[in-house]
Length: 124
Image (cartoon, rainbow, N blue to C red):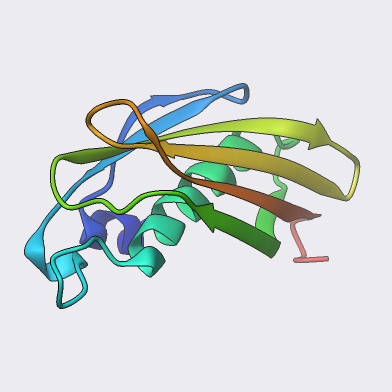
């Protein structure tokens, strides 16, 4: 995933049941106040959720995010953000994934629930 690589995202564990990824705080990922930008946190969550979805798909299928809802609970001003993504529901045409983000002190930073469309080889 070129965009995830550009952000500096690292995948530590990846299976159809769970994806664990992390992203280090860096000044270029922040707002003017030194707080990690919400869009960066959402990108981390979206990437982890998409990966856990993709790994559980049938051969040849792909996925695309169709909805994503995030709740933010605390700012990130340093350290590393860890994402833990799990599938909540795997259906024939959609998969619901939930990603929880944790700061370096293992406190919940944000939670994202997304629905991923399951697409065949032709993109349908």
